Amino acid sequence: MEKVAERQLEKWVDHTRIYANNGKVADYIPALKRQNPEINAAAFLHLDGECVQAGEADYLFTIQSVSKVLALAVALMNHGEEAVFSRVGKEPTSDPFYSISKLEVEKPSKPINPMINAGALAVTNMMSGKTSDDMLQEILEFVHQLIADDTVDYDREVAKSEYDSAFLNRSLCYFMKQNGIITGSVEELLDVYTKQCAIQMNVKQLAKVAAVFANEGKDIETGEQVIPRHYARICNTFMGTCGMYNQSGSFAINVGIPAKSGVSGVIMGVVKDVGGVAVFGPALDNTGNSVVGVKLLEIMSRSYQWSIF
Image 1 (cartoon, helix red, strand yellow):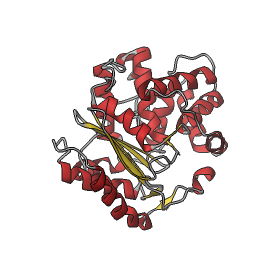
Image 2 (image 1 turned 60 degrees about the vertical axis):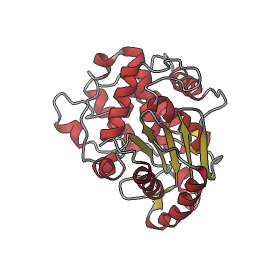
Image 3 (image 1 turned 180 degrees about the vertical axis):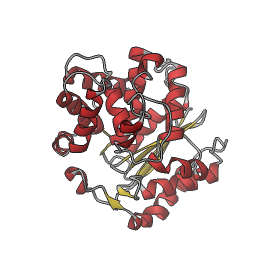
Image 4 (image 1 turned 60 degrees about the horizontal axis):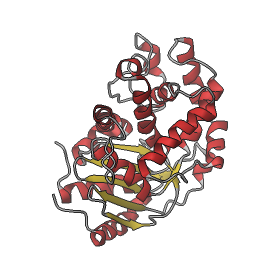
């Protein structure tokens, strides 16, 4: 398969900047509201180790819902497939990522998949640490292992802003606690979850995370099986079916790769046996996906024939 060329990537990033006008920065999290919608960046890490980048590739953003994939991998490694899916389902949904409605009608009353907020909260509740600090550290150490960089941390201001405004997520937690899906302190769980979402990376670091998933869970430099192959496949499958919120179907048609977006404007994409891609642009469409990021991935997928379909 043809390799991603840096000069071409730079042209595409410049070309897609104008699409930021079609979206708006997330405003329901006060700290994210201040993001500059004109910033955008992209990086692709080939499995042979070559990284190409374009735009503001050193700009740090919070990964937000991309962290749902990482927490799922940790939960699977902690407890195994049967235990994890006793608390969260495997099906995609057309409902918004913040929806509570399925919890009210599903029997048993568990979240429909790990990529919506309710499901992600249930998954984060499965971290093995006894305190919220221990649980967060478990996720951070996993990130450090994936990218071989132990300096990655979370943005304190964004985490506090999300925690203070997490009224809907509190509602989801209490509903699930009532039905035995989550255990322990709701406030401690929200503390972990909001800090997990506020983990900071740039596109080069996130492309390295994606490359591990593209390489069936193996570190591209050492060959170490960081994530068991079966669990990496489960995570990739969820990204393919549920990773782009309720736009996942059209994204599968137009781009056709496993991907996970976050409301900061980030999208992480997995091109199996080729490499990992990360794109960033804070202006979002109505479903919460980066308008610049989606457009850029559409162009790249068509040009390099990435679609798994």
